Amino acid sequence: PTGVGKTELARALAEFLFDDERAMIRLDMSEYMEKHSVARMIGAPPGYVGFEEGGQLTEA
Image 1: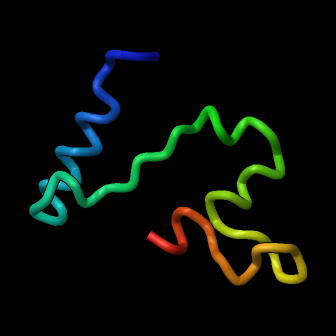
Image 2 (image 1 turned 90 degrees about the vertical axis):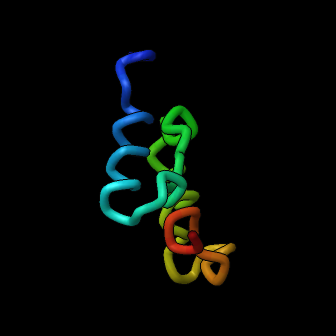
């Protein structure tokens, strides 16, 4: 649900753990509704197009 403080909690954790509230990666989870779209986050498996590029988390 919106407005419950999820992003603010992530910022507070980043500030506490890394002394920088910007030390976090923000992902729009609505982009990951399909089973195969997780490759966008972690990268394509070996043998697939884009394997060398990595994903949003692996290249952050």
